[in-house]
Each structure stands twice: as C-alpha cells, then as structure tokens.
Image (cartoon, rainbow, N blue to C red; front, side, top):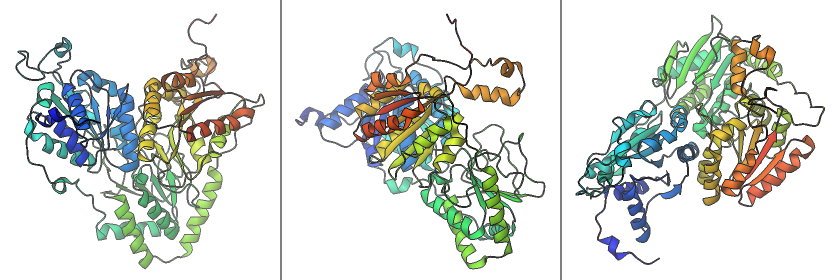
Length: 581
C-alpha cells in the first residue's frame, strides 16, 4: 500500500485518538454500523490504514444486534471489553435487547454513539449538512439504555478523550462488569485532540477481594457441619480456575452442586456431586444452601428452603442493585471474588477438616438425589420424526475437545444440558439476560476470540429470527467466523405457552389449544442464512437422516463455511394462525 503522506500532516482528531488509544489499551475489535455522525471515524479509519498505524480491527455489522452480541460473546471468552460504534439515537435503539443481555450477563463493553451536530453555520468541521441532523437531535439520547449502563458520559472536550476512554474501560471491567455508553457530537469527533498519553497502570479496574479470615472459617465450619449441603451457581465459571476449585472443595467436603441456567460451565458435568441443572432442585431438602454467583437460585412460589436451613450468599454482585425487587434470604451475604474465596476455603479445609461419618452421609444423600433427579427418556416418535431428546443426543455425538456450544433454546435447556454434561471450562456459553436473538451473533465473537474452536450454536426458532440472521451470516462469511447453527424448530414460541400453563394450568387456552404462538409453517429458516451469507442450508425432519445431516454440516463448518440445520421438531401447538385455506 502506498504511504499517504498528506495524512501525516493532518491533525489527530478526537475520533482518531479514540481508535489509537483503544488499540493501545487492548481493544481488538470495533463492531460497527456506521452513520452520518461518523465521518470523523471513517476518515480516521482511512488515515490509520494508509499510514499502517494501529487501531482495532473493524467488523462492519448490518445490524446492531449483531454488533453488541458479538462483542458480548468475545468478552465472555476473554473478559476483555470490545468497542461497539453505533449511529446516534436510532443506532442505539437498534441495539435493542442486546443492551439488557450485556448488563444482565455482566460482560464489559464500550458502546460509542455519535450525537447530531449542533452547529449550523458551517464554520466548524462536522456542522449540520443533512436534514436528519435536525430530526435525530434528541434531548436525552443517553436515557435510551441508561438503566443498563454502568456509566454514561458525553465527550465534551477533545483533549479529554484519553481519560474518558480509560475511565470507561476501568468502570466496564470492574466487577461486576458491564457496558458503558460514550457519546460525542460530530464536531467534537473532528476536533484536534492533543493531550499527554495516560499511563495505563494508573487506570486499572478495581480489584475484588476474598473473604475475611473470620468469614472463611465461619462458612467452612457451616459447610462441614451440614448433613445435606447444597451449592447453587450460574456464572461462577466466568473464571475458569474457579470451576476447578469448586470441584476440589466439593470432593473434600462432600456437598452437592446444582447449576441453574448456567451461563458458563460452572462445575464439571460428570462430577459425582453434580445434581443437575433443574432450578428448585433439593432446595426443600438441604439443611445448608450456599448461593454462589447466582441471580435466581429458586422460584419462591414453587419451593421454599427448610425452616432450619442455613442460608449463605457469596457473589460478585450479591444485592443486584440494578434489578427491581429482588430478595433471597441469607444469614450472611458476602460480596467477594469467588475464585479467591474458594481458594481460601480449600486451603483451610485441607488443614482443618478431616473425613468423618458425615462425609459418608452427605455422599449417600447426593448419590440418592442423582438417581431421583435423573431425567426419564422421552418416548421415541412412532412416525420416525425427531424428538428433543434425539436431537440432543445427536448433538452430543458431535462434541469433541474443540467444541464450544453457544446455547439459546429455552424449551430444551434442561434436556440438552443433562445430555451434554459439559465439563470443560470455556466449552459452553449462554445468555445471562432474556433478550432473545443473542446466540447466533455471540457465536461470532466466540469464534473471533478462539479461532480454533468448533462453534456449535443451538438456538430456538424464535431466537433465530430475533437474532436478525440476515446480518449474522453476512458477518460470519465476511470475517470468516463459521459456525454450525442447529435450529430447534417447534413451529412457534413455546415460552408464552409455558407461562400461560403455569398461571392457568387447566384454563381454556389449554383445553382448546389456543396460544397464538405458532408461526412460519412453511418458513425455510436455514435458507435465510444461505441467502444472506452463503451458509449451507439443511432441513431435516426424519430421524433416520438426523445424524448424517449433522455430520455433513459440521464437515462444511470445518472447511470454513457456516452451516445451518433446521431441525423440525414436534409443534408447540396445533393452532393455525391467519386465514387458512
């Protein structure tokens, strides 16, 4: 490439300074959908490229759901924030529920949005030149997603851009992690930015400590004295070393571990003390419950702990201040680093806790519980169609040491997790929020972070549609991040049906099979990915063809091309919507 000498004399703008600083601070990617507020960024991209400078790699995303969800997946794998650059208020709105997901999953991200220029005379670079600069000039743009952000701030002075970015990264990466939102007007991004470089070591995230010696001893004594101790966790596995520590401590003390809606592998699935993935499990039997990095350990209306049970909560975010009403009782609550705390407990246990009769009693209880909690096999369809269990077993046959499963199929959560029993930290990721459409996009970020991984995305048909697949597979093809997507297609949205039956178990909706959740009877979901990004598209409804189809699709992914398999499963309802002929 020819060196652009004219650019060497151009002033370094705020936008360029932001890009170069982001690269210096370890941001690898900018996921973006560009707009009229980004001329300074586009010019900076071109200048840096022409001068062989350093900036994060640019990933252009046709839709913002892809942008933040991909950054989310990358952060789950690396714990490092990536940058998401979006277009004023409308681009921010297009982030949609991906903002909720990033916040609820506690992943760091730097979201940068432009603001409409305010100057109209044309004297300042970046002044208003288009009619949308009037219609997009909102009064409270930061409030669009403000309640989900750890910090929102407007860049008002060019010389402050280094410090604003570093504070944003510092806040995003301080546990509990989360997204931050930075804005700046078009004129500000194009202003010259001259300021001394900030030493990165002065802007480190705040470190979370472990337990005090007194608290460590108190919790260990309680765990050792219990006859039926239970640990419930969801996101401990964001620190892979913590999984090993929890497994070792469980073997030493003899307590059961239940993973509820796990976002990571939190406990080896084949561990003898793993009691499954079903929420509410053993809550009414345990005489001690340790809530460990978990948001919803049980459903209060469905089960209650024993009246004499001792309850403890150890969490990086134990009070959930960004949630509305939330409460689970605990006689002691500690905000602490779970990895450090587990190391403290394990070290003390090795010196002070010896095996006694209670160890045998606890292990017998766990073994009995595992037998009682084992899922029964689903009946094999007589017509040769595919059941959920058969689909899960077929997926399990694909898993190798290189597999990373990205999961978002609420209706099959328990069945798939029980079948796969993932044991390797970093081999499974799921959304900590409830904004559907996350997985197929998060898989892009996971693949960027771990290029040698074989990413298998398991997604419901509704979640697939919500993920804007026209954007997903365009990005996957353009930036060489192939994934094997397996759509569990039950012909509609099962979650509203389940919710209705929980509230009205014998209501008219059940008797008449009227739920208004069935859609797309003739939809060819996989073909969307083929049209948008050249993915190989498959549709299978015959069990006899299932395993062969999945193996063929996986070989295509191994060759560098995405593949999408539409697995036709029993329909959630027989109701036909619209005006059938």
